Image (cartoon, rainbow, N blue to C red):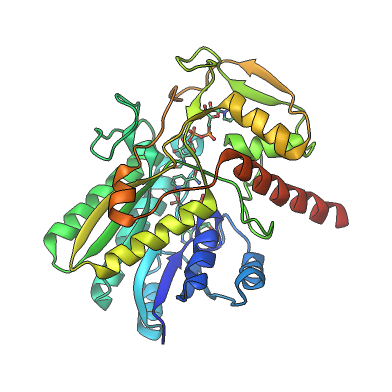
Length: 341
Ligand code: NAD
Ligand code: WQD
């Protein structure tokens, strides 16, 4: 029987795309998700794409009994840990909730894995751990810092993983630092579903194109970038999913390993670049206003991708045109669903 991968947060944005990639590569998947930021209909959509409905347990990664039962009853060989809260602004208002969910949740999961003797772990870290970039592109040895509880929670879990790796033999751990994941599955069946008004650029632009918001606010045009607007390394979520698969395979072949790699494209695009690319993909005009900088934002950030290429043999290959086309197909699908209600 093929190995089973526990995917926590697997009904969410990145976890659902990675579940598709895992199933397409022949792995069995069991998802553990408390549905605090996703819906169970994603499971049927994954089945529509891959022909296989993943296993699903509705539950919380902080619930020791649920974890114990999962590891006892399923032949799990590795965990991919996506479950977490991710809104930077909200984390400054509710730090304890973020530390409990993201840090405590990871500790509980690692304890349960340790007890069950399962020692392969792939963690969703973030480029947020680089803080304000001192040198671009951002390489994995760039100093780390955090300016908000969300970022701190990622730093803490990275450190906990290092301690766990050093304390006990046999752990195979990948800490994957994502840049800016965007886009959706090309089928239009799964994508990002932010609750309320989106914080991130791409879903906000998509909702303006769909007429759900009148205008986009562009947060500052006085950065030291070619057009003055913020520059980021946007990565298609399907490329990101393939990066996870490559990291899992790498860990599976290692005796023991603590791998830390960037998952980005190595290219930066400005807010204006993204607006223009989305206008092209959607054939809709995106109305916008230039407003003040968003507190805590950095000017520019993009990844040094060499380590991922060297270690994992993985490289992102989808450009911003495809990211925007796929995000638009997904957004259009949501609009049609709403219209039918
Ligand atoms: P998401 O919110 O779409 O998915 C997270 C999933 O985890 C959701 O389905 C949610 O219901 C579930 N969840 C949250 N807390 C849980 C808990 N305690 N127990 C069980 N399930 C729980 O987010 P995403 O964009 O797919 O992000 C996945 C991971 O990647 C997160 O850890 C996030 O911090 C990290 N990350 C995301 C980005 C990004 O921009 N999307 C960038 C870097 C890192
Ligand atoms: C991108 C650019 C904004 C919205 C965040 C988290 C980070 C990571 C990814 C999890 C910036 C500008 C945005 C808008 C705008 N998540 N913008 N108008 O800030 O790079 O990263 O998500 O780990 O931790 O901080 O992404 O999409 O919010 O912003 O002008 O309405 O778009 O100023 O230049 P960010 P983003």
